[in-house]
Length: 367
Image 1: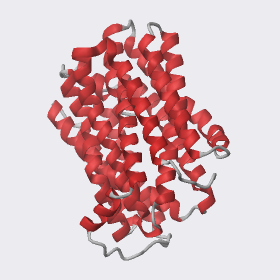
Image 2 (image 1 turned 90 degrees about the vertical axis):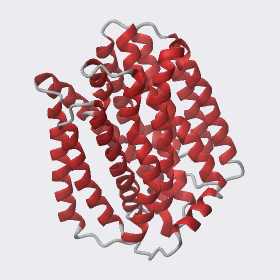
Image 3 (image 1 turned 30 degrees about the horizontal axis):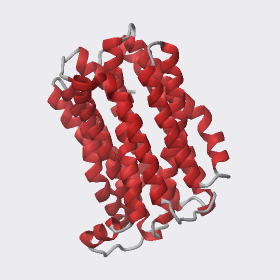
Image 4 (image 1 turned 60 degrees about the horizontal axis):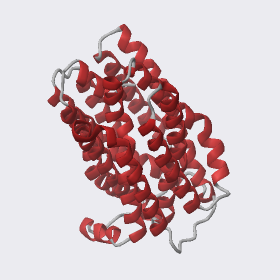
């Protein structure tokens, strides 16, 4: 409901520079990068329910902070805390879902989860547009904070009835565990690919709205349409394409998805009207469908049963791309704006190479 318009608010209302906007938008990705490993580790050690509930209450407080922020630096602080909350909630919630999902249905689980995320993005975006036009910029943040608070209370009530399945006492030293993870070549290549994917994706959230605002008539309106199309495409096609992809090798799905991401960015490079931008966003969104849920599914497959959350948390290092994307994207706008999307095409090709190397000789189940 709120974060997609943060860049525009900072640009139009607080007159922040592109690099400062990139820092404010991307700082949550940086804190999530380093917080994710600890979030996953503590989830495996102390249990999923405790981490989920604590992170949701803290998240509510953070968004109340957004509502009363009146400077760029306060936005930076709140978004940094936002990233930490997400870094703890993500691996804990994913691990809890895995615990109660049959092994042969987990690949579909991540497709359904990704669909739900984007469905909420569509609804939240539309509500955010309506609410922000009818009131002050702080009101959507207040609504989000209150929703998080109510959800946290709901979780306290409902999770009390659930007995956690994975209650293994984790005694491995955190340093030793880090070394084990770093030696897993498949995991590391997937993280590198995901860092780059997030870097590319963040251009659609941080730099694209600025470029459209500066170069296109009604650029803000066009950007609103594009992010709705992005989420709507995924909501409509994620499940059918996800089910179809279960019949295809994981490597094939990832390579095909990486190619679509590259093609989408190439179309953005040549786009000079609404139609081409919309076509580019549809193609890019199809790439998301084949790439983003699949990566989480592979990590779940290679993780030991008692370290699911730790592995999923370690994958939060992919958020480094989410941090660098807006910051370096702001720098690219200043110095190399015409070539920005071509740089993204090149990075997508690097992603494909990483997938090929990571899955060479690997054989994963099809569903």
